[in-house]
Image (cartoon, rainbow, N blue to C red):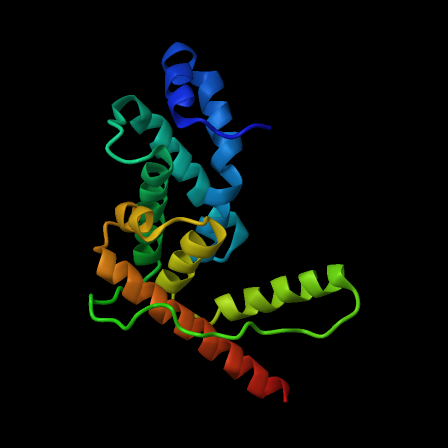
Length: 190
């Protein structure tokens, strides 16, 4: 499969909307599902949220103006859908103010000693899932956008509607939350 070309997609969408939308789904389905799963950890709920994101995307594509990239626009929809679901569940999507330190802190990754690389990767993934359960929803979502989806600060700012400083502050605090979760987990193991 080649690189997804947003301009080509928009041209294809005008001539054959259904086929183009299938292409869009193939490109973004797993990414959006992962994002939703970080917000709402129950798989069925995350699947429902992912479906809601694509329904809203389908309904809104005709009016997409191109003020941002298509990717950023879709993540904005995903952010709103997930934030709404979190609000409905009675939990809080707590955001942070502009005041923050530089986000380039020195953090040492947690390492698990093992000979089998596949087992290590599985262990790392399970460990990360445990850690993600212990941090606030907004932190999960920002970390997912930044590290898993490889979005820039600017893209995250556009997708979330947060000012750049708030994105940096939230990402800084999210890293700190994750680090604290690692330390807490290590202390229970020792």
